[in-house]
Image 1 (cartoon, rainbow, N blue to C red):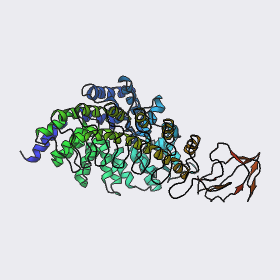
Image 2 (tube, rainbow, N blue to C red):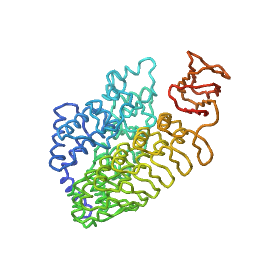
Image 3 (spheres, rainbow, N blue to C red):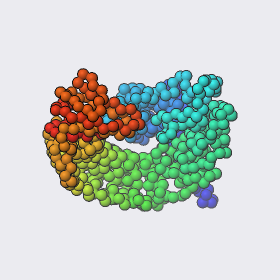
Image 4 (cartoon, rainbow, N blue to C red):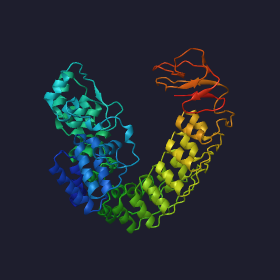
Length: 590
């Protein structure tokens, strides 16, 4: 038997052994139904084959399901329904790392916030109705050619219109009608646009054709565009192995193993292994599928359990990054070096903290990993948790004795990092467990400096309420108010002043916060409507009279024109909210 036959035989054996995993995720990624009975069948497969019998974490399965939505959004409601079934049956409390739009849709549908720190109030559009009845997009979604033609015959129809929606894979410029036809596999609408309007077949058309899966559309697109690595990504997302092997064999496009992991495509991973016979690389990545027997297969074929890639990462680093509990247990039980570092000095615990892999982090800690180990930048796992806002893992690390006030090479503590990256709950937890709130880094900055500099109002308020030194100066002589006023962060500035910030403080360059007496200079940048300035006064003398209404000045500014300087002298100024006091010039920037 030839080597090729041996490899093919091994592929078939592995494909058969892990059929349960492959079929389960194929059912999810290739979902084409909104019928309750069929959805219940899929749910039973997931429940039986993945969660109950093989101990996959329910919150991970929910994350996987919801993250499919941008690639198969016609069945958004079906994915939401499946996620809700798991959420209810397994009493799930919180799910991390879900695409923001998918998390928002779940919230809109069921009133449940999977991540309580998601701020859905800032999303104004009703994404659930983006393809409501009687829209051209709905017609494309269902390949309703009759209705589609009616839309194109309406007065004012724009053949070049583009749809911008977060329900699709990210794109800065939105998608054309023809690209949407490719996404949905709407072949009749596709042909009509090509025939009547000569709509351009773009590279995105070809890429989306691997998602839509219509052979006619794909064949036509291949006449005008050449496949690239993005086509392979969409082929892997489609879970259609024929598309993957077609690109690999006909266009010599390599399977990206990372995509196989990201989109739970074990079958494509096995094809990659069959083609490359790279035992070491495939062993490292195998741990991310969280299948202990898959890891074991490679060890039985002679792979060193402590093997590393070019970045110095072991299989344990990979399993920790994906919260792969069963794979992590297997690796530890078979003697992997638990404290091994990659080229950046990161241990598996650093990776668990980065990706909020709480269960894996707990497992690593219970087996003796050094909780305060530093990477090359001097950062501990707690620093990483603060940096990536990994709330649960941060709490776990603190509960197991992580050094809260440990500094990295820049002199920054985890609290400083939390303030710098707006990790609000972590900041609160650190403070409540004794973090030094006024600790300075190598630049003399405290957590309050960073919160004020970046307009993180909630963290700034929490720091102040817990006794942060408001007038502390950094190495440049600047206080938190210097940074807030420089960037015109009005609310933070007001809060600092109301708690005693010195508005006359000068930095090392002799620059005060505001300049000299009894004048207001209001500056305005282009293209932004200036907010209303309301002033009550006893007497107003203006170089150019603006608008005076009941002892108020309303300064209005149209778009795209630099506002002229308004110079006002007065005896006394009372603002609706007292922002500046005594005799300063106030420079307001917007």
